[in-house]
Length: 127
Image (cartoon, rainbow, N blue to C red; front, side, top):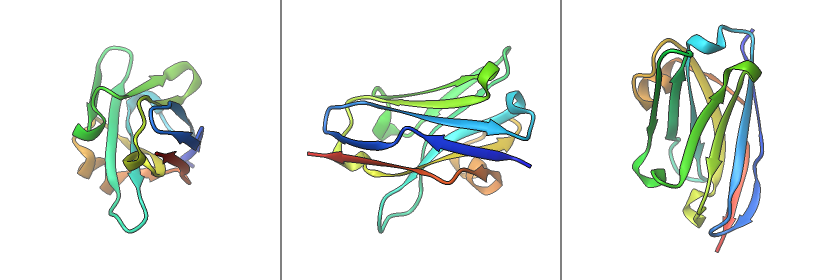
């Protein structure tokens, strides 16, 4: 059974940093596309970042609003996905969810439609 458990959320002031973690279990971790999504109150869920990394091939993608501020990474030895978030803005406030789906990454929509999901971790950025 696939399980994804996020941690690392919290409250910070604008300009601060947080690192989210997602520990995965129950599947062939290296051969899955993984990503981060977020959902703010009253808004639709939004893709933030995706990563595929099997030791030979590595791809990453980001939504435009976080490029240059967020970095997605994986530690295959620890079955853990990370999202390093720097220069946080109030508009980054949301519940952040980890997602995983078998195969290559092929965009946020594809990952969203086929993913297993974590329970979410709250990020709050104050101005």
